[in-house]
Image 1 (tube, helix red, strand yellow):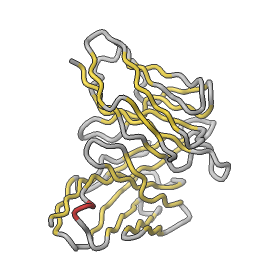
Image 2 (cartoon, one colour):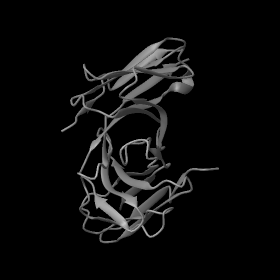
Image 3 (tube, chains in turn brown, orange):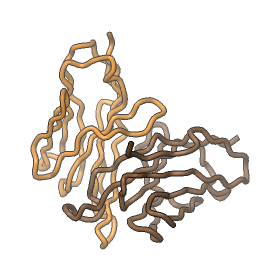
Length: 118
Length: 116
């Protein structure tokens, strides 16, 4: 089955801790994204990556870091510098088919990770 | 700056009713528009992607229309079922930088409840 997996489903963090959220896809997609979802707000982009070993900040990158060492994987680290990390985190991917401008293709989402700060 | 609005925020209908969900966007220079479904505590499931050159896209009981000039898209659900209960979001990509990367602006969604 092709798809996007995220782990863990639930994550609890103590104050001052760094935690890493996993995102893996076997869709052979080039681009991957991390979003944050808060109640009553639309999804907000944290980081994105169009290609291996390259990534760019989104709208709310402060307090987060990412890496893209493999095409299939795009882990997100929530650092202690993120002052309000409690949220639902969603990973997505899309293909760059050459039929559309880079990145303008259908996005597919993982099941999400709910992070709670204790 | 693209802004995407979905009204109403919540909708409750009896089973079997046909219904329309609305999505409005401020910048009509869009490339495409995507509709998603989100069940509570779950990720987003892509329902339909409608290109800017299209006026309609259909999948089963779902039909999405797009009117770029008025900045509107509608998602029509025919013969609604309790299993359709979920939050429906629309999303519009736009250029983020000179490299052409898409920034996707999401609406806040319409929470649909279909009552048996």
